[in-house]
Image 1 (cartoon, rainbow, N blue to C red):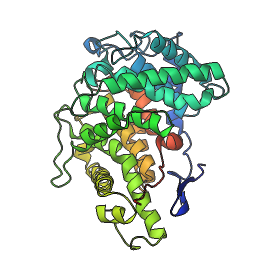
Image 2: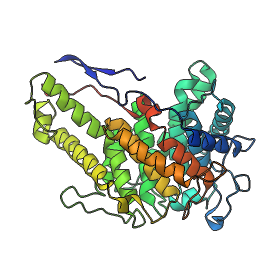
Image 3: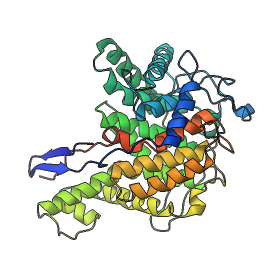
Length: 402
């Protein structure tokens, strides 16, 4: 059970902010089978691999080369399901993955925008050449609280995380996306955005200008007025652009809604006031911030409505790793915003995933990212997003005009 966050504003005192989710959902039997398969797919040195773009037909998880993106993604799945460094059925798997990734990051050059010289992996080809650093940064952020009792390890993880964050920041391009884009580069940019947000929410210093620019790029992929979706960086697939937009607007959408709710409780705006620029200005935000938050709220809600369309949800036409990753982003977005429809979405996706699971417990892609390791990790992360609510969400102190 998550405890409500508390927010303090000098002008209005203490305001209770509701927890993103009431309670975490148990691991269903079919997902437990998938997690067991994923743990067995790990190499002895702690890594996992997805294989190369040139050989997408290879599905044996032990017949591919290890890569950091898949390692971090898989380790996050086991961690989010309840296994930490100290406890849980996959504690040893998580520990081995952490050691592998720390060593890799520490040995990587300080300059540059990635942590590996490996090229041509499925994940890099489809998402982007620098996806490894974003995935690894997310894992470090999530594992960092579990290293608090080991000062030496805690210091190494924090240092490695900060090194990854600097690399991510250096890799941003002029339009707010990330360099080295793959077939669906918007997804690499979304993962970079998520890495920065997660670190920021955990109190790790990030460049706020880089994060704001990243969010603006994702917002620009969905036109609020016309509903038009820009898919140039999404391989022509609306799903990828919409879910990336939804994920990148989630935190600001939450900030907007809760700020207006607070203003209502203090009589600063009408009790029936919608989330709008005017309401947010009444809540004490500057005109610029009010517009930014209101736009994020509207876009997030619009993206959610778009995903009610099954033709959008079908993505490329059949399930690949990109589809599974998109579903994970929607789950995280709904957890962050505290969407009342999360339970409905969870049940629908659980039925979908259960139906397409392989007999051995894994999930495989049928185009592009075919790797069963990556796809299984993505499914696990999608169905356990509620367990990361306190890491995903950052509730800020409301800034009021003098």
